[in-house]
Image (cartoon, rainbow, N blue to C red; front, side, top):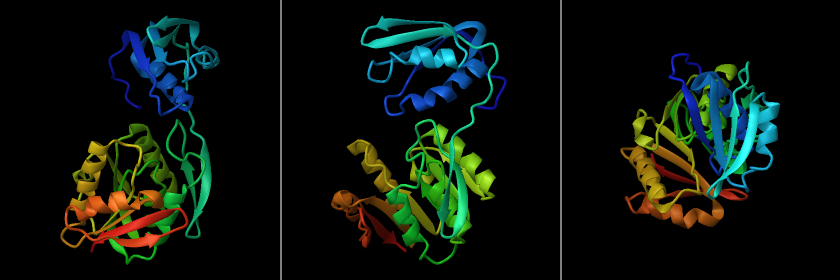
Length: 270
């Protein structure tokens, strides 16, 4: 996002992810125009009708794209155009949340999970984790834009945080948020929960939209972090508790329940 030495091409294809929505277009527009396509080149955006193929041309035109056209490309629509003459970095939307009495401001935009408020799962996990003894470092697996990790460090549960996520946009926002709120945070883009250092406490708001293979790999990675006396706190929706508790039981871990209104925190290890 900040490098100036990326190779540029006369034609750049952009395939919009289905799970993001058009909120990501603003950031991608700047990234493509600033770093990827040549000044006289063309960027082609591919998306389905349901993703907003009818309104994307107007959005790109508003962002300064020129000679915007639309055509069909099989099941997809192809929206093509030449980049704006000038672009400025996008400014993500922000909100402020009170977490254990501390006001933290979060940049949360471009289709990340729970962009305008602290979701119920994170809030419940935060409440349970606040009752844990102080540790030097906390790991947040699936950190998103950072509310849990930043909230726990600011509350004094840990001195610093390390984190993983598979979403580079979320990690970019988490880094911004950590700096803005004065919280030490190190992030790694990875699907493997063990790719960051061992910590006395690991927290995870478990994503429940991923497939069985990725769920199994994630839970096994979390279980490995809970081994050798390390504590794991993982939150899932109450309706899915049995499924995720079984993953922990399969590797010999017994989960202690911390039920909430709509979510339950599973505690293992320690």
